[in-house]
Length: 363
Image 1 (cartoon, rainbow, N blue to C red):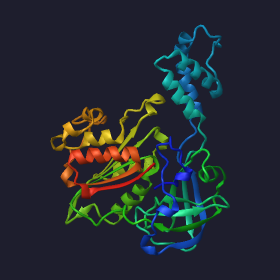
Image 2: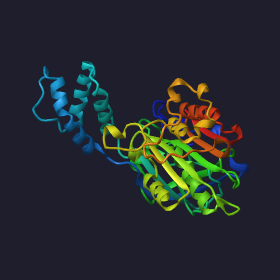
Image 3: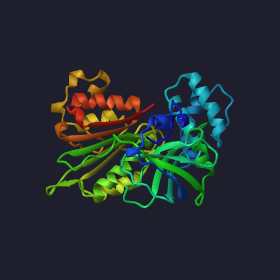
Image 4: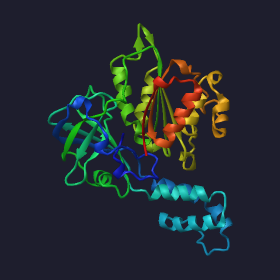
């Protein structure tokens, strides 16, 4: 999990978690400790100026569409004015109205909206990748978050998605500073985690902050040499989906890992980024990307929903498409319930054995 449902907007595909009463302490060995914050770092960007530039490029189309309106000769330089234009374009029912609306909404979102939070508990607790911890800040309601750091570190790291109107995340994003104190309780969790090394490739699939436990798992896996068994190296894949490039937690770190390790493969997929930049990577949903990566000869194509069948046998945007044997995969899924269910269906009809499908879903 990444965050508690009380702090989650049901319309936000990246917010997720469980209430504390729904989670199980690991082996009943809970630790409570004060902790000092050592890192508070935005992981996303303020892209409002970038958005204004992109919208200005569309001004000739806007003028032509809204020629009967009393528009200025130059494109607006305030996003508030573009919000009004977006409404007029929607009323005109033109094809690019959705793009303008998407860009306006992006520029209007608060910054930061994705936060790296690191702290050092006075009493460090033992955990395994996939576990989570409850944190309290001042008098705000405590919330539970996945632990993103490897157990081999002497600190705890979380990734926090701001939820407007949430009980805790806006305060963490706006008020928390290095040197502040938190109160930490954990670890929680039992079932969602790595197994002992085995002779199978591993595929991790996540959306949004669902990647937090995978940052812990993948780092730990390589640190412990679990990608090698009896002298043979096995591949690790990460399919990570989000709306915007700067919403991909640890994006540059994943890219570096991909460059430095022959057996790690990072496949980001972004649904909205191409509206703002010349994004050339994947733009499909993670379940669709998984279909591209599986051996199409093992897929029960007729059992798939019509909306998914066209992705069987399709190449990735990079052209470097794996042909994964589903019988030899270990699959980990973390994200919103609708996505997790569709990935589960793809895995089922793609031939991944049920015992090798590990799911943490929310929402």
